[in-house]
Length: 228
Image (tube, rainbow, N blue to C red; front, side, top):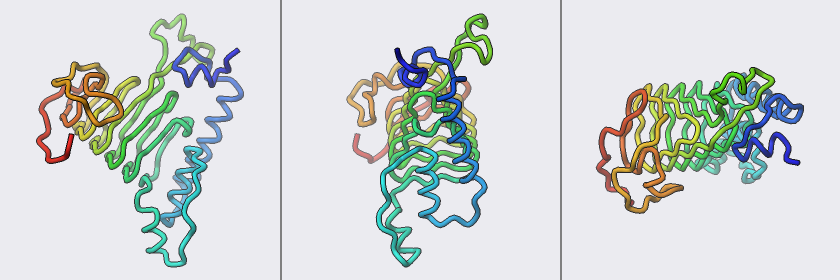
């Protein structure tokens, strides 16, 4: 039989208050607390502590004696500002040169994937977890939860206080205006093959578009010299 964690990762109904998942959240909470309370971190310490949060075992390059030279070795690693809140950690994947400003939240019931060079303003919340609508099924801590993956493409900018809800896919090179809530599926404005993780016609916000508001609406296409 599938474990509750396996059900969670498949986006099925699962029970979150089981020993395995409670322990996973507790581990991640402790890693976040260490990161958030640390002062005067070197670039290497910052990168390693984020790897601890996300359970990324990829080794860092050998440390150089010169701090600036050592920081240069890690220039492509994501830059995450404290404080940050993460549920499990192992479901958050940030690409190269991603920047996450302070007070961001990742509810990573299912995978949250962020493409290279994407920027988050402060207070951005990404939710891949959700609950049944029927309160009889939801049933507080005794009931099941579920989730859907979130995918954010390369070269995006999510301004301050943006919220992205479960199952959303944002294409490459998009801008999401401050305070927006990305919650609905939009038809793509064109259907040429995109260069994000999924093609344009499967994206809630297609490549190179601006979306603003609550719920977010696509307002215009971004004119760019970036190859599509």
